[in-house]
Image (cartoon, rainbow, N blue to C red; front, side, top):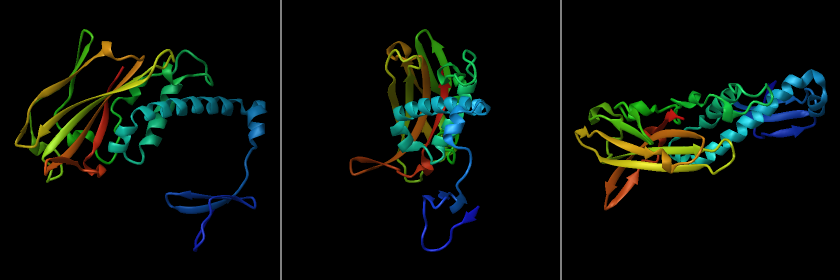
Length: 245
């Protein structure tokens, strides 16, 4: 494998050489390997074909969910989120106890693997929101609550005047019989000495889907001249999957 240097850089294939870019720079290597036609027909590559099929299913389901939380990703996620999320979706696909390898589906897998997933790996949610979020199910309602906490325990921009806590409810119909949806609830707090305890309640009768992701996110604002100005940098933005059903 050769590393490119100089003024001209290429990406793609040329003269039997594959030019590609990585985080460490531009590289070149000789094009080779087994042809796609052989992989798709040769009995010796049956295991590879099974992996390819499950890879495709996991990628499709991951793309579907990411499209639902695109505004949240744009607000709070870092550049590694998509790859980390896909890795988990592939693991979920492989836990499907119903279908054999090669036919396993993410909808039948263990979605609890998504619990605790941080959207911004460089800024953990618990550093931005220190009180523990308690989850209580009462009938058809799901109650997320937190206790009173001093703002001194938070990490936040020094000029922030307000904090907004979001609960993003993502519903996914993995059986394909209905529609996916995204619901967003929020609470706003004025920065001061103490953050008051509170709760956000979701009535599950109002939301469809066979799978649900509950994602908490947080943003800080500065109130100036009658307008809230959000902090655009992800330095003070984070989000976390708190519960999965």
